[in-house]
Length: 464
Ligand SMILES: [Cu+2]
Image (cartoon, rainbow, N blue to C red):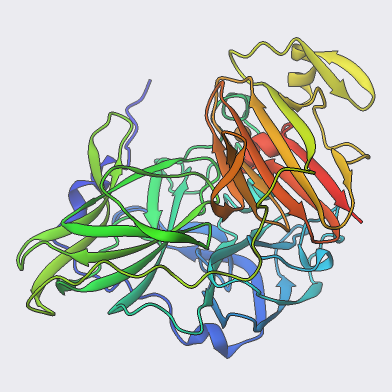
């Protein structure tokens, strides 16, 4: 085997660079179009060639869309790509026709065509948008961006930073995107895991700060399959929202924050490192070693003393599910994958063995179905409360995402915690969620390890 260069230089290269992290700008307001197109960007460290990506406005992440809570989001998505596409507004309780799921809520937008998205953003918080046609390919190529819905009265912070965490699978010689999107090994294991990890498209993002600066960090995991275990170093912080939805009370972030694909976390952090030091958002690497995800070099001091614990964010409208008294029980059993025990599953009305399924690019099943079926997992009446047990019989974790509605987790028979849209279910684990089916339409429920979704882990519910 020839020795291949790797991107391992990325850890050491982090320190010493002082690049402004502020990528968000007023430019996001300038245009009501969002052009999906090819572009060339420098992702890999200097010395490597530029990478040809697909990005909104030619960037990855795409421009930050920022609106006030209750305002409309209007974007004409123009498809300048060589294949059809559509855009999903992840975590936003949109009208079904605006959900952007090609094949379910709209036809994919052909090359050269456009589609007008127009919806109200009812909930404040940190959301994101991404391609939802062939998403295991299109998101991996860079089609995603932040969607920030601001509170009428946002919390008092010195800076508000959106941090889009992503990974890229690049050819280590050419820095081109590895196009083996359908690779059976990745599909049947943890999904497509990249070899270059970026924040806001930079492998070495560095945000200069002063001591005692208070920052709001809006973390978005836009990767196809990577789970980010994160920690703070030189920062004292609290989690104030998960998946955009406020926590009842800020939770001190002293241990590891696990951010699964598609999940978001809003943190409020105070810089405790002193001038001359560098604080970090730390990622726990595969070998359990801490690695810098984002560096915050400290110079000077913004205040003499640290500040008080932040207040909770104002709650969003709607209470979600509070009682399970009349909830309809549903069950979703996840099977398949490498080292799993799925002997067979249904595909196209035919029962196929695991090898035959694998030959057709199917490695997983929901309730014995290795594809999205014509009939929904459940036909729900508008306003109906639901409890859904998720049984993970595989040996891999899965980040389960419900479109159109938010759920709470059910523990000890009670709905608890903040409302969420994506739940990480660990290997061999059973979890339960509850929600009120209060948004009419056809809504996907799928694994957000995107190659898992493509190879069997997708279903839907109908609300009428
Ligand atoms: Cu999965």
